[in-house]
Image (cartoon, rainbow, N blue to C red; front, side):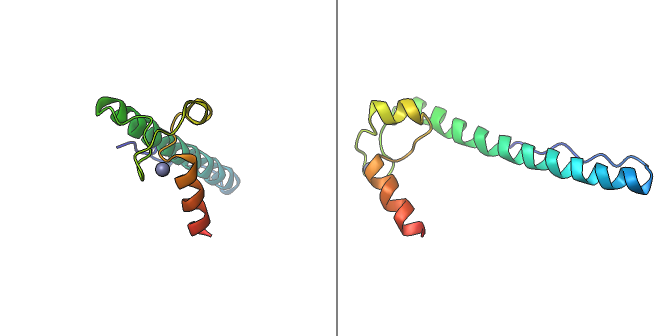
Length: 89
Ligand SMILES: [Zn+2]
């Protein structure tokens, strides 16, 4: 599991504290983004191991080379992805 670096808790003036908080928020946000990306990549790599990479996780069809080329982390074929996005709305 990837953890965000602990926020700095240095003593500082109130003004410095404000900018420090903003900075911490940005660092935290970046760390979360990185952790998410890492999770996606790890998921894709795990599928290389069990030979399911490139197959749709929902219907089992080939995702397709051009789609994987554009989105190597894609988990669903274009049809299932479209369905899922429609259901989310
Ligand atoms: Zn599919």
